[in-house]
Image (cartoon, rainbow, N blue to C red; front, top):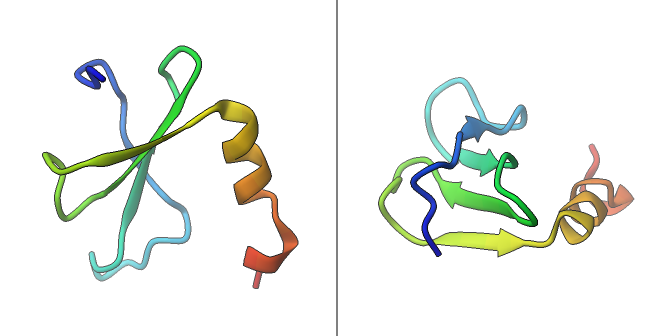
Length: 63
């Protein structure tokens, strides 16, 4: 999958110290990409938008 057009943004749950950061790109047609910000050239997980919304909206992940 070519992700060169992805506009990555850090998760609001990422800490301010730069560790344990997740980046999400939701501007791609038909998918949401997720990657580790410490390894921007590494692999990305790809989700259908509905699956991503269900994941981030799950009550078990809220603090």
